[in-house]
Image (cartoon, rainbow, N blue to C red; front, side, top):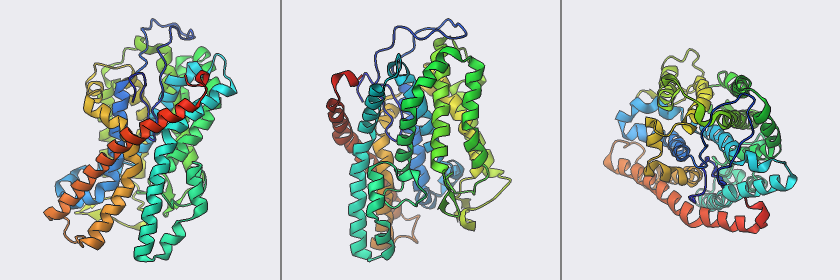
Length: 434
């Protein structure tokens, strides 16, 4: 990530950031505001935490079975699908914080197209490379297993949908990379944002703070209201292991624009905000974690996905659907972090390790499921260690593949993601690169 870039999200949400504007539109409610920074490193750190959360979510069967003491963290691991929701909120915030002013004053189709091309340069190249990796892996699996289900999953039409980033818009199972549905969702949000940004700019100038807060809360209400009715372990996508119609667009658009409205509040009041202790990032983070543990433990409606009571070492492996109630707190967490630099959580997220983790988070997210699939193939068919999860050989394999995932992500980020982004950026006319 260049030093002039601001931070943004997962499915590759890193934005090219302009110099801090000299002035902002006058708010409807005047505020004595200091300058807003163009780069928010603590939000890069959030990307690292969200990616790690998703990673542990998918590795959790191996982690809990091979390291029994990690069973205490199973409720947190089981809710790791919410890492994607955190990314969606962060994406909406960063897109608005970074692009609102330069895409308006006035809005033009040319600016919208330039924005979409720059976003595509972030998400498409690595997505396509990993998709080719999945194609090779499925071809190998078909040769080894001659499994008709593998051949049925390898649909050329579905592959084309992945290439076009529209696979998440339809009611079909994941047939290639099981995790890049979120990129399709992000792309949908970018398309809507490229037009809706003009409305957001108008709201920044005219809508008062209470109304903006209400807009942010109302925007995420649908996903919370629907999410609490779903099955435990459905990951806010499935019912009886089938994709719920319209769930992906609903999920991304509600959370993305919840983040966008939060950005308007920050842009409006900036440094003038003085948060009480219970609204500061560290307190909000603790409350989010506490709610996740409490909801998992005291879930009043046990509705297991496919009716399966899946446990490892006595620990339930299904995440409670009711943990979705923390999504509105994601808005507060991101907004408070944006105006907090010296607060403990903000300081932690600004460390070099977490900023590095944020930079590689997109590649890490995209490649980790392929590594997990290979790992499980090795454990089950090559080494036949399925019944020996506490053996040191099994444990070293699990840790080794986690390390391999991080190494691949670093290589992809440094030698492919960034070079291809710069190359695609240069394809734009100079006037559209801002």
